[in-house]
Structure formats: structure tokens, C-alpha cells
Amino acid sequence: MTMIKKIGKYEIVRELGKGATSCVYEAIDPFVSRRVAIKVVLAEALGDKDHGNRYRKLFLTEASLAGKLSHPHIVSIYDAVADDEASYIVMEYVDGTTLEKYSRPDHLLPVNKVIEIIFKCTKALDFAARQGVIHRDIKPANIMLTGENDIKITDFGAAQTSATETTQITGIGSPAYMSPEQVREQPLSHQTDIFSLGVVLYQMLTGKLPFLATNNYSMIYQIINAPAPRPSDSRPDIPPQLDAIVLRALQKNTAGRYQSWEEFSRELVAVFGNLQKPEKNIPDSEKFNVLRQITFFKNFADVELWEVLRITAWHKFPVNHVVIKEGDLGKSFFTIAAGEVRVTKNTKLLNVLRAGDCFGEMAYLGKKQFQRSASVVSSTDVTLIEIKAEALANASEIVRHQFNGAFLEILVDRLSMANTRLSQLLADKNISVF
Image (cartoon, rainbow, N blue to C red; front, side):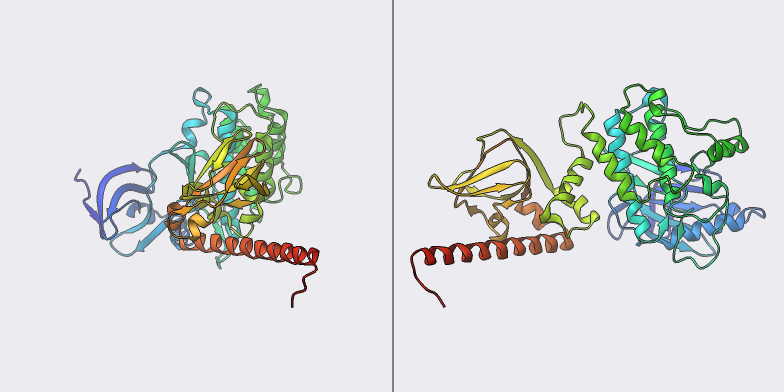
């Protein structure tokens, strides 16, 4: 069989996979020199008498999301074409594997890495829900793992969107991951995706599904009626707090399930504190949660915080560690994630900074190497978030704008404090000012 060399303007590199309704290729977009993945809907699928309309509906749903779900953990859709010659969707190329590989008993990931992955999924699906999109087909095959711990949710063909004017087709989704309300073909909310992600979490922890059956009818009966077993029944090292999270996500009744993605993700972060972490590095989910709690980042959207994570370095230092030395040239500024530092000049104490405070920002605001005017030394064990000026300079415009706004607030606060101190000093010397 002859290999297709071109689809539209895209140059085909290789076939990635083929299913009953579509074929996926790796390709190059020559105009921007970018690797992409192209999902081509097979003509025979669209022409199928029994299911052609359904396949066409799935294609149009996914195509309609082109450019609308821009999130670090959602596969971007760049383009969509539907004409007499071909129907295809052009999307972000992800160099990785699906979570199916890590949902088997012989290939399970460490518990804390599983939580890390599911946490990122909650943030991506929360973003989608806020755009009025419910995925409706969350399963390991639709979640890609790339690099060490990055994920990308894909395949929004089954999605339900608030902008859709026509009635959504029913029977969409994979039975083993469907929520009770989905198998009953009832109206759906974001909570159906919460249930499905709960099934994925259970499977990644134990290597098996919470509801086992020999056929779809039996599976549907169990989803509606059978209680989910505790993951720790199959994997004893799973803590009770994680058991509780899984079982709550898998509640039959939506009233007992997590009401929001934020609630789900917050509890996932909390369970980290009770785990023995084998890895030395701070997990991204923990970093994200720390950033979200810091006043400096209060106006940053989730997508912007994920970008902040990519341009930051996190350090843990013991007490009396010299972070900045007076007179040195600096290219970085810091935000305190935990602990306390003292600021001195000529050995005289100027200030004490605590979690959430920022220092060294003139290295960025000065737009050049900046000579440090004071020393900063840790008063306790500290966790510092370092951002190099050049890294921020290369960040997206919206992230730079958010940093500039946060810096402006700091400068205003410091100016106000300086005026207060000056007024007090003058008052102490009985000098009046107008």
C-alpha cells in the first residue's frame, strides 16, 4: 500500500495508528516548521449507513474546539478541514504514551506520581468545564504521559459543549468509565468527568477496574448498584486518605461526589503531606498549590501558573544560608515559599521577610545585571522560588503583564511603608511636614 505523502499543506512523516473510524499521522506544518498529529476520518466510516451520522457528529464536535481549549495539559487543536476530498483535524503532536501502559498490575507507578498525574488532569478538566466543555470519555487511552510527569488530555470528540444547540447524541463514552448518570442517559455536568477520572485513579493505583464484568450489561448494572471497593484492598500501601478520595469521586449520587474540580484537586494535594515521597524533587502539584496560596500570584490564572512553574527553579536552604550577597551582580529574583529570611546592609538589619514575600526583583525591573544593594540570609530552613530575569523576559506577554502588576503592588506597598516610617521618624524629631 502506498504511503500518503501529503494531506493539505501538511507533509506526512509516518502513520501513528489506525482505528475503525480514523487514521492518525505524524506530520510537519511547513509554514511554521512544527510537528503535528493529523487525525483523518475514514471515508467509509462517514458513509456507514448505521453509524455515519454519529461519526460525523464526533468529528464536528472535536473540530469545533479548534483554538478554544488552550491549556498546558490539553492537546491543542490547530486546524480542522471538512470537504469532499478529506475530513481531518490537525492537533498538537505529543511525544509520549497513553496511561493505558500504567494501568496494568505489572506496570504501576508510585502512588505519589499517580496523584501528581491525576492532579494535573483535574486542573485541565476544571479549565475545560469553565469553558463550558464536558469531556464525557475520560479513560487512560485519552490521557497522554509525556516526559517525566507531564500529561495531555486528548480526544474531545465525545465532548458536550454549552455552545451546542443540537441535542447531544447518547451512548457516548467507554462503559467501564461511565458515571451512573451517563449510563442512564441523564443530563450531565462536570461531575460525570469527576466520576470517570475516579475510575482512572482507581485503575492506576490497583491495576484493575473498580467494577469488573464479563459484558457491558453487567458492567452497567455494577456502575449503578455495586459499591466501589477500597483501592487499599488491592494495594495495602495506599493510605486511608487516598481511599477516601477515590471512593468520594466514585459516589453513585452526584450529591455525595465532589461538587467541584477545585475540591477534588485540593484533597489530592493534601494527601501528599501523609506520603513518604521517594523522589527528592518537589512534585508539580505541590508547587502549584504553594503558588496558588501566595499573595504575589493571587491574580494569576491556572494556565499562567503552569507557565510560572516551567520558568522557575525551587530551592531548599538551611538556616544561615547566604542567598544574596551585597555587592554581587544578580540575574534572579526570589519569592519565599516557606520559611523566613533577613535582609541586611553593612551588617545592619533592614527587614525580615516571610512566606509570600519577594526580594531581588530589581534584577528584572532593571533590565540588566543588577548590583545587589543588600544581603539576604535565611533565618530558618527556607524554600525559595527563583526566577531568572531572562526566563521571565521570554515568557508569554500575559505572564509578564501579571508579574509587572504584582511588582507594582509591592513597590506601592513599600513606598507606603517608607512614608509611614519617615513620618514617624520626623515626628520623633518634632519636625512637621506639609
